[in-house]
Amino acid sequence: SMLDIMKEYDAVIRKQYPIRTYFFPARGDAFHTRYWVQTNFRQWWDKYNSTYATAYELRHHYATENINRWTDEGFGFDAKLLYLSKSMGHSILESTRYYYSLVPGLADILKDRTGETFDNIVPEVDDESN
Image (cartoon, rainbow, N blue to C red):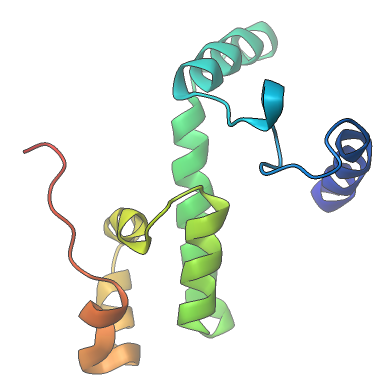
């Protein structure tokens, strides 16, 4: 399973970086830059796949699949939102709100379950294209 692979990776990388900040650290226990991720993903994906994909498509898929699963599992909204936000490397919860627009009908479900507190929990974010 993916969990087993991640545990095995963690055990191996912990020998190199016993007190690391990032699960997939770059040299010096830094984070990988967006350029590094895109370049390496493109190289390896194209080598082994005939279809087109980008690293950030996989990131969006990860976010929306998690959010979709929430509607089936019951909520625990605060904990799940924080976990998703942190697992995606967002420094503030507002950055995670974008993904709600990718899941049809989720905003209505969230508002039904959280009532008037929705905007306090997940504040509106500005359009980054401005």
